[in-house]
Amino acid sequence: MPELLEVSDLVVRFPTPIGDCDAVRGVSFSVAAGERVGLVGESGSGKSVTAQAVMRLIAPPGRIAEGQVRWAGEDVLGYDRRSLQRWRGAQAAMVFQDPLSSLNPLVRIGRQITETLRQHLGLDARTATARAVELLTKVGIPDAAARLRDYPMVFSGGMRQRVAIAIAVSCSPRLVIADEPTTALDVTVQAQVLDLLDEMAAEAGTAIILISHDLGVVSSFCDRIVVMYAGRIVETGTTDQIIGDPRHPYTRALLDSIPRMSGVLPDRLPFIPGGPPAAGTRTPGCAFADRCALAVEHCREHDPALLPLTTHDRREAACHLVDGSLAHARSSDSGRRNTP
Image (cartoon, rainbow, N blue to C red; front, side, top):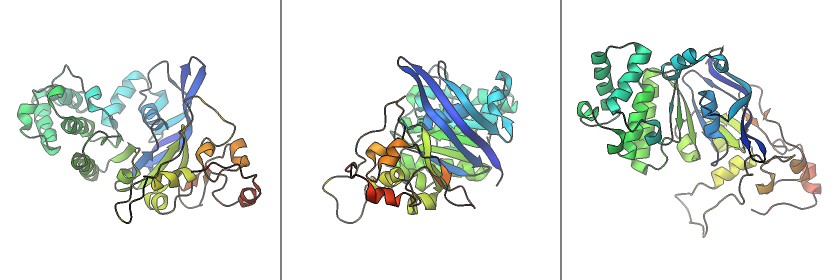
């Protein structure tokens, strides 16, 4: 499949009282046409900031300090304001984590949908209204024609998320970025939202980037998974590779933290000890070393590069121990390891 989106060496920087903070550090990944890619990691790992950078939504004083974002070969970071407005919505769209914050609380739902349709597709008012009713019906909003007159605040969280998805897919974009679309929704509504994204993507051949901290949700939806930690990518691969054969200790720890629904229940739910480094903190070695039970001194002194594990696909990991090349270091290490 041809690459639709290519992100290369992306760095997103924010000023702080103690100096600049790189919330995203050298992130590179690609999304093919029609592909579903999961972006996973704990809160603060840089997932949402990466997505906002792709959409050119980083608000000052934050900025994209380095890197490239290419769309079908074009330089998104070089778009002028008019080109950017045409691209957003028509070619790439985003569903935000909190739909109430992305929907204008002072504007009726119908107008928010029809304005998008009229701006990008050039529809007249009557045709746009009919299309808005069709979209709301498709996403499961009952009595859609009447609900066009409602304001966002009268909808439930699940209904607002459906409206946000309707707006995002209204112009049949080639890419939809869904940022934690199931957060704060009950399990039944979560399944409905994912089914809705699945249906919309299947109908239009839309590529999807699904951002989540939940590997269980991502594994049931995505073709490929990108794992982020402390602002950088630590592992990539197909869903089967990541779930069935995780190569980075952080990925394994995330999978081990998922509660099992079968077998004997443990006395304590598994968890990853410690916490990610504070924003802006830079260490000479691997950012995960202080939480990793396998870390040796080399890990704390040298930052591992994200390297390919195979020659025929996009399987990558950033770990000194991933291929066993430091097995001797493990055996000769002084024993100063973190206990899980």
